[in-house]
Length: 338
Length: 209
Image 1 (tube, rainbow over the protein chains, first blue to last red):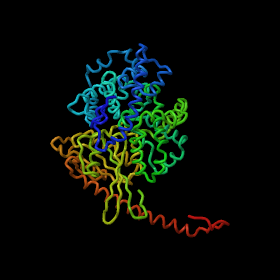
Image 2 (cartoon, each protein chain N blue to C red):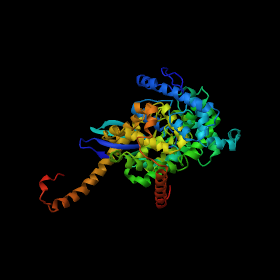
Image 3 (spheres, one colour):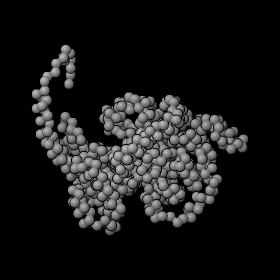
Image 4 (cartoon, rainbow over the protein chains, first blue to last red):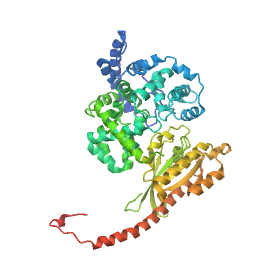
């Protein structure tokens, strides 16, 4: 990470707003830089021995403690299935970009280009990331016709571009996320997303029953709170360094990580959530908790996601997903879709 | 809709329409009197509150903004549930977006019946020279479905204040009509209540209602 923490633009090109809290950020960085230095050394010796990154317990532990930014592109490719997918069709990305493109897809992708990170210096009209973003999104839309383009993918691909600085790497990582790591979040009726919101609600009910009941009582649906969390994988939600640390684990451990993050946010901020007494303040509260100091201190935050929620097994998630998917199908049979 | 004892009316309004027609911009113009060319794709419903006063009545609007892309339609019911008003926005330079308004009208009528006040807004009239949605068609369709039609430009601040004000007036009217209907209904229930035998029990003294 570059030492630009006092400039008006952060190391990923995001402009810092007038209300940016330099003081807490400085405090955070004074601690985090040491962590980064120590992690960089560890990773250097891991990668320096010429070993390719494999999915081992050591690597998993290393990933949980954060991948140094310069290694993110290659490590993300290696620990997810992206690398394998690419090896199977190495020319795919270029071939799709040779065209032709469907006008409808071009139009829908272009609509969101100027609306993706307008506060980032690399995404202004003059900079070139809008073109890169177009290429990644249009290539993926043609590659996966079931998904095509879904709003939200613009933020994910945008952040992938900022983190990897490579269109092709971003394309493969996007493909791995949508097709291997996440359930059907971005398909026509977003079934996987709606099911996962139900799963989260159920998990909160068992892990923080008072918070769950309070949120229900105030009448704010979980979907209103968490749609963006899931659709954007916390991009444009949490501070950028925290998002990248979450993605480190997401690429290794899969979508379960998203529930860990959600539950941690909810449990850590239990007191402020319970203090809200109407739905407007509650909605404001959920906007605030993703920006507060505990969300910014990514290293502690990432440690907490493995402690605060308690046990969360894959089989629990699988069972809950199956249960709510079934409920949804039954409901849809009763009232045929519009 | 709830009416607090203080006499403040709380209304929920939802903005619906195709992606990039200007839903967020209309809301920002109305609430903060701002227009921002730098603007983000809206992904999940957020809402802003506005307090206003009409004929001495205090009114609190919470206005919900939603994601426009067709896929997000599945989340629609969560957002429009219990709404008192809906603003269906289209872009006058984009015929498809007008088609989308028609879909919303059908759905809202089916799901909420006549409980909801519908407004149709043709936005981006600053781009009048690029108009593709014919004026007459938009207006006659709106009349047919019982929705008021407005032309707006969030960019130039045209028609926005007026739209929200008229919508609010109509919601108040609709509320008062319903309240009247309710009064005649509840008074009957009250009579029955009065005649029901008084319950007594050994600890009735500590009962509170």
